[in-house]
Length: 338
Image (cartoon, rainbow, N blue to C red; front, side, top):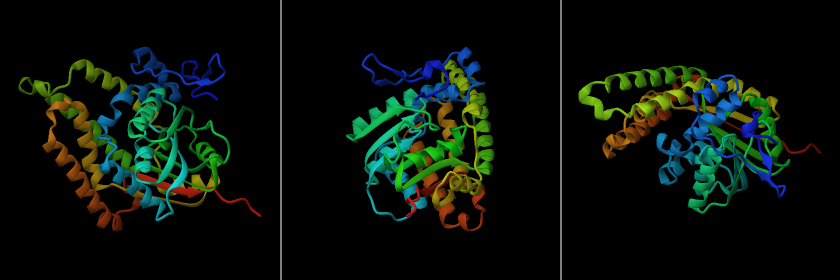
């Protein structure tokens, strides 16, 4: 089993015969970035290794009540009221473990496994799990070739992962393969095609405005060091390579059914909330973190919560579902026919 088609990210056996995952590479050179433009899986590794140690801070990820409620809320919104907990769960494309670890803390699963193409992300996810006292193992792995046996998991989850995978339907087939009959998959945080258009536009506009205005002498202390901005720009250059897909909710449902899932349904959320969230997150990435105190955090989180309420109570009843930014999907592995 290999984590990537490139030699540098392949999984190799140790002298004892055990599988040894590759080491993280957090600083991509300009030459590596250029090579990654033609190799999406190499780009995934470089980009996410670069982000691994700072990813939780960048996206305001925590492992407390705030994010436990958020993760469990996404799960419940798409999967409905189900008997919990699941015995064993897998997170595909785990990143730092945000989704699975918070779901486990919320009582959704007892034990877990994490996989990601990025060694850096797996390292951080396992460290986070250890710090939380959660029973979790992990592997560097390609989502199109999941390194677990058939019928292993009761639940497979993922957050903002499907849009990074070249062959989404093949990955869903793998998900269904490693699920036990009757097991469920839940994926959240996927960009809709319409939502991605306005979110990316807002992000680019905010970055350009912030990095331009902070060149003014009297705002110099609001500007990150140029080397940090340059490294951010190099990483951002890979976004067009790593962010492969956007989804129409109906098309994603059809893909999951074609892969073999049953009881498939997709829902969407975050319209007004996304219009605030993307500029806020981009601004936070462009200025020194010490400039943003408690008042800013209260505004950002409070504004997001308020606009999410508006989305849920009002806008979802009048705005077509494909205009919302986040797509979530669930389905079940069918029981064997008798």
